[in-house]
Image (tube, rainbow, N blue to C red; front, side, top):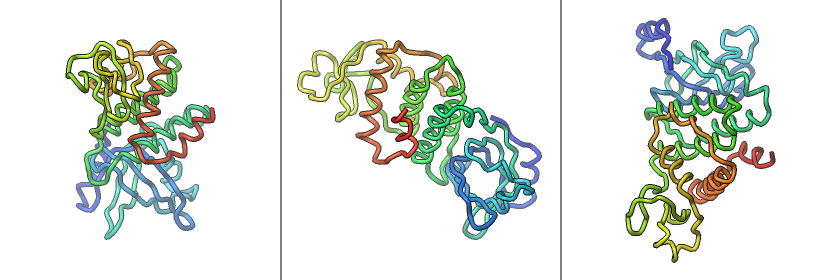
Length: 259
C-alpha cells in the first residue's frame, strides 16, 4: 500500500483535515450533485464521507468515488460529518466491471467488509484482506469460489471469531482429520465425534488448508488451490458456518447463489 506525500503535507496545514488510505465500499447519490460514500480506511476503520459535486462530470472527484476505488483520500472534518476534498486513486479495479461473475464476487466482498468493519477502529487488516482478495479474483489460476471461502474465513479471524481446527473440541488432541461441528464451532477427532449430530467429515488436506488460512499472513493467502471434491466440502462448511454465526442477509450473495 502506498502513501501520497503531497497530500500528507496538505493535511498538516489544517488540523481538521487528514489523509486516509482506503477503499470505497459504497457510493450513493446525495442531493442533486453530491455523493455519500462509505470508506474502509487503514487509519479510522469504516467512515462515511460526503463528496460535494462528485456527480458533476466537470468535478475533480467525478470518477473517483466509485466502489472498488482504492487510494488516498484527503478528508475534512465538519461539525457532524467528513467531507472529501481530494482523492488520488491507485487502483480502480476496473476489470471487475468487465466480468459479471467476478463483479458479483467483488460486490459481495465489499458488502462483507462493510458488515464486519467498525468506525473509529484501525482497519488495516481488513483493508489488506479486501485488497488482496480482489486481486485474487482477477487471477484465472484460483477458482472464484475458493477465493470467496478463503476471504470469509480470514475475515472471521480478523474479527476474532473463527472455528477451532487445531485440536479436538473434546479431548484437545492435535487433529489430522475429524468432524466439523457448526453448532459447537470446531472439529472433533474421530474418537470423540460420536455424540455430535451435525458432524461433517473433514480430511487432512482440508484441515491443513483451514489451519493455514487462519495463521498465514494475508499476503500469502492466495497461494494454493484445492482438489474439486475438497473445495466443495470447504464451501459447504463455510456456507453452514456463515449462516449459523452471521445474522445478516447479503444482497450480492443472493446473486452469486443464482450463478
